[in-house]
Length: 117
Image (tube, rainbow, N blue to C red; front, side, top):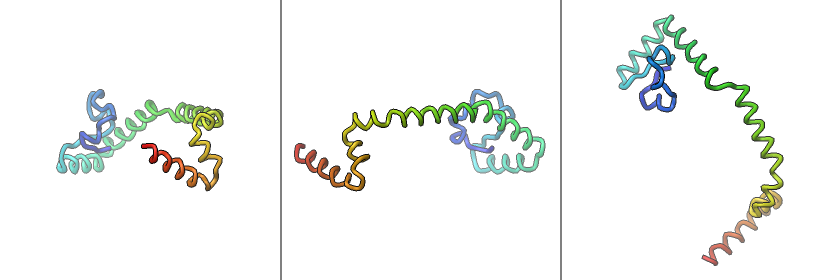
């Protein structure tokens, strides 16, 4: 990967010692970015090292199984608690149960709210 200092924000690159341990190159201006692109594209060993390092970082930081299971747990929890949430939020319950008539009721609610303001 070749990026700018702004593009590298949030990637924790600053905590790594050098570009080789990160798996990419940072360029601050168009010339540096072009030179880095040529260097990476023409240097097979650098390309392979950056590729492997990048894969390693991704597999260490983003465990697919963990995140997949975490997402599924949250979706199941939302699904289980859907009825409770509907009862707490009367506006949402109108939207969920009213079919296409929800616009009529929401328009009435907005109209009454504006009258009270």
